[in-house]
Image (cartoon, rainbow, N blue to C red):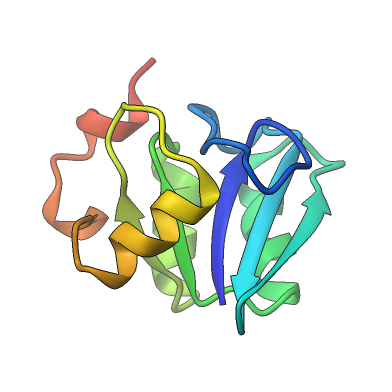
Length: 114
């Protein structure tokens, strides 16, 4: 299942430039989009929420160092989508086409500095 932090609970929502304090996460699998509300507003707890809901892949544009390391240690593959606006459907298509770089191969300061 592919997870991504999103701005609103809508299928045409864009990936949010924040991670831990994001309002919602979209989970995409089997052609279906499911929305999770992020009540905790913490990057580490967000990773736990995603794991509990079957996320195997995370698409993001910003993420702190600690949640990033926990995601990797937990077996979630993390991909950097860049800073441009990308909707849920665009992100899934680009991911499937191999257009996003694995975050392990990106300089961490690219996606964890404000």
